[in-house]
Image 1 (cartoon, rainbow, N blue to C red):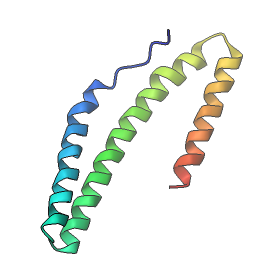
Image 2: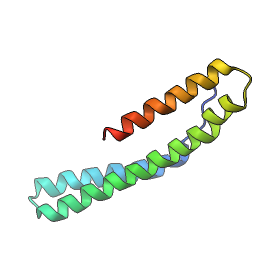
Image 3: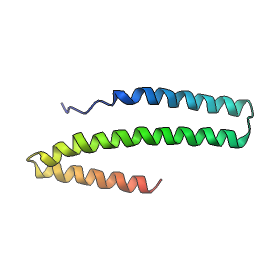
Image 4: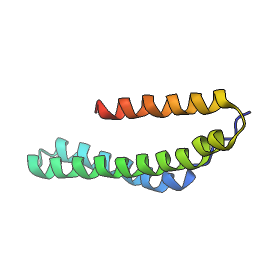
Length: 93
C-alpha cells in the first residue's frame, strides 16, 4: 500500500470555499450585481489556487522527493514524467 501524505489541513479552506460557492449561487438567485458576483467567483478561484499550491508543494516534498532519494531509477523517471504531464495540463488552463 502506498503511503500518501495527508492533506487534512486543507479541509478548513475547502469548506470555506464550499461556502463561498454556495454564496455565489445565492447571489445569482437573488440577481445581485454582475461585478459583485464576478468578484466572489475570483475570490473562490484564488482560494482554490491556494489549496492547489499547498498540495502541489507537499507532492514535491513528499512523493517526488521520496522518488528522487530512492534507488529506483524507473520510479524517478515515472515521477518526472508525472510532473511534466502536470505542468503541461496547468499550462492549458
